[in-house]
Amino acid sequence: MTTLSGLHFIKGEWQGELKGSFASQNPITDSNNPWQFASGTQVEAEQAAAAAHSAFTEYRRWSAERKAQLLDAMADAIDALGDTLTEVASSETALPDARLTGERGRTCGQLRLFAQDLRQPQQPVIIDTALPERTPLPKPDIRLSQLPLGPVAIFGASNFPLAFSAAGGDTASALAAGCPVVIKGHPAHPATTELVVRAMQSAMVAQGAPLGLVNLVQGHSPELSTSLVKAPQIKAVGFTGSLKVGRILADVAAARPEPIPFFGELGSINPQLLLAGKLANAPQAMAAAQVQSMMMGQGQFCTSPGVVLVKQGQGLTEYLEAVKAEIGKVAPGTMLTKGIAQQFSATAAALQQNPLIEALALGATPQCDTQTQAHAFLCSATVALANPSLLEENFGPSMLVVVADDDDQLLELINALPGQLTASIHGEDSDWSEHLPLIEALSYRVGRLIANQMPTGVEVCHAMQHGGPWPASTHSQSTSVGAEAIKRFTRPIAWQNMPKTLLPEALTDGSQHPQIRF
Image 1 (cartoon, rainbow, N blue to C red):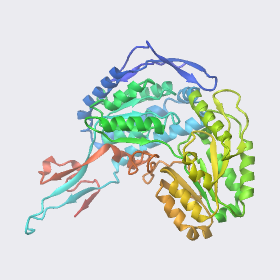
Image 2 (spheres, one colour):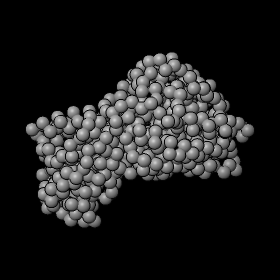
Image 3 (cartoon, rainbow, N blue to C red):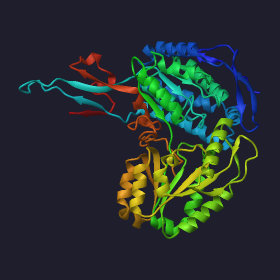
Image 4 (spheres, rainbow, N blue to C red):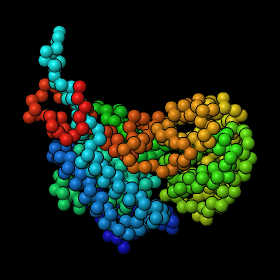
């Protein structure tokens, strides 16, 4: 059995008491794993925030190369955990080894991508050179760069125990920006979180990082979360989770004496717009692809396709029959937690009882309380427009097919959608020009618009946008995935008439950092 402390990690030490602790849960067996964890309070939140603040003065002065070496070392240490990490994570999440191995590769790949970006930055600084002879007033020398915000609170996600948790995108981008972090571990996978933080600790020791650069508090009380956001040393928050909790914490961040940015990725139904040509030519293939995408991670991806928008026409009957057949093949699956399973099942049961919509198809019957059954529902556009709650996320293996009478009603549906992380448009070449108004309208509802592909893959790259209009995220201008995510945790500063000896290296004449000059 893997040995873990079950404690918090604050200023380089594992500390706390297991009094009033909570257990790691195994959703497959619906029983406790053999690890207990200290449940943090306001005290630990404030200690961790103070520790991060104490590390900031030193870490913000680190060179880009030194930060890159740290991120590379963290990736190597997480890789070195080997099978232990996937075995522990699987016992806490019910996710299969193959999925977790891929997620570890994504996590470490993102750390290395940010290291590469630090070594070869893509974002230029801006230099306006002086014009002392300009009249009627001379123009001063002004140079624009970025400064790290300071300590960042990171909230781990339930559905990605590696890629959106302790060493996930929020942590990696904060460290790349020059910011220490306080990680609030998700109570659904505390053992996985401790393992990852221990790997990060070994990398920090090897690289001579300041104590308090990475801190971890564990627990499930609302007091711990709100206390962390309220801590005056915290200067930004990265959050991936539910709309309900995200809104509460965003309001706490805004209500502080010094309000701070809250970068929350909340919820999305990722609508699939199925156009006439594709519906007529490939109804069965589209049904199979959409159900397969929906079932990734048992429907617990933030990019899971939850709604299909389609209009009456050739191929619709065949498409609906194919959806029934595909859903009918789906075995019950274990959810991340018993609570998530119960919430999903309750919502699905309410939809089944709703006389305004049709229960189109059901998967195989669950065998225990931690499993769920796949669902597909059907309703008219008129019903969906009159009942906006139908266009809200149901976190799990569920999809709703909404049938419109014509393009005008499809446009009305698109304009009624809340903000989304993604949407896909599925069509033939002949569909694009004919449906430009629909495609344009959809682009204003999403952060990423996809043609003829499913939304569930989120590439970690420089051009990725993982965010969207409210309620998909709290800041539609930012992304939580890819190199652009680093910008969330920096702010611009202009240096005017500054002696060259006081300028940041990136702003100096002859610097290898990309520069735009005016």
